Length: 279
Image (cartoon, rainbow, N blue to C red; front, side):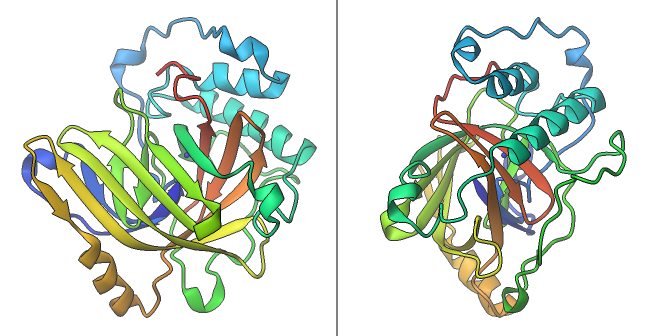
């Protein structure tokens, strides 16, 4: 739950329901956006998945737990607490290699397309303090001045400051090009396809953290009009004094599933299979 964040509200009134602008990485995180569950989730279908039966136990349990939550937007506090428990168990029992981002051979597992299936805050009221709680190290990344103000949202992502609701039928796609050190987030919204991307580098203090510098943005409307919004990121970089706008830390990864934590306190669950989770 890809990757990038910050803030900036804009756009035509008809677009505000699907897109609101902020700046970060989610992941995808977060500024991943999030809120109270809606009444249409009073009835929740039984979470069963044939595909989940072929996955490692913890991965299967996580996928079943996040199914039918509309990318986390309809996840109640009990569901969020259970997700945090499963995720923390996975992060501590099978952490990624610290050379994931520096070794080209190891990085192959990260390369390519991933689909964002779930987002929620990394901290919730229902979970009390624990000794093994995940805590971001040097979250602001020194001179990069990465924003770390918590973004308590669910069912949405923020990429390069553009926050997009992902709780609908479409699944946001995050693509890593390891050879070029590029990352791109793409999602279909009510008004069209929103794509943002940029370069990334490995953090010098946290080996599993990819720091993103968003430099490209485009909105392809359903009316056939394409809007290039790359200039917004250039202006933001000048005002901020840094092109780097957010980071995503990979805390668990396998051939099938990836878990990430973002600079604004969001948790993301992504899968290789677009249809691995039932919305």
